[in-house]
Image 1: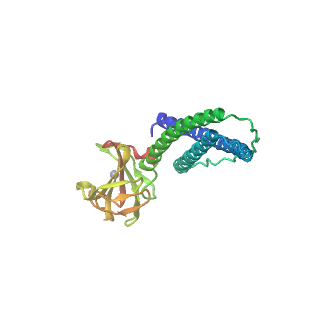
Image 2: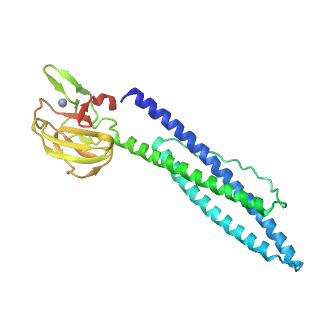
Length: 276
Ligand SMILES: [Zn+2]
């Protein structure tokens, strides 16, 4: 794997974590703010009740209060949606990055200031909060789709050895031919595991390769497993990293039992050593 690309992925991951943490704290503050609004509204409602008791019911104000109540309810459900999205993003981030993003929320109590908040003021605050929520939702959706790509990348890039064992022969020129993969020594009948998630695109005899499996992964990767004694998957099957797809053998052109393993990027063989 290219050093620069890893560096980029690392920086990318770090910025994602920062964005998720910042967004989560915004969300928490929004929730506090909604609680404050609810408190103000309840005070306003108490005032209305008082007015009613004095038989000076201001119908217009009552309608206004009801309307504000409705708006608050709507805001509450929007915040709930946002929280769900945030939880999804957090879970995805934890899965994709294998980091724990849960942070301790301060149990800080907000001061229940209020009483003389005008309805206009409450309206203004609700409008402001509403637009803030929309922006946060957009941000979170963006982070979510980025994380989905990252998650996909993590399980699509071949990683690890398909069988345990020493490498007998490396990638590159040897004598007069170019070796397009690595040979991993292993006794006949050893289970061979897929090194990334993907779909089986070839399963059968392939000339000098003998019994061969090719798996197509996302982002242009494919892996090839050759000289097998047994194939346990068929073309079109979806496999995950670690699934047993067949067993080692010495079919095709080979001088001893080993697994010939290739990684290709856009159908061009690359050195598997960088991915083991
Ligand atoms: Zn080989």
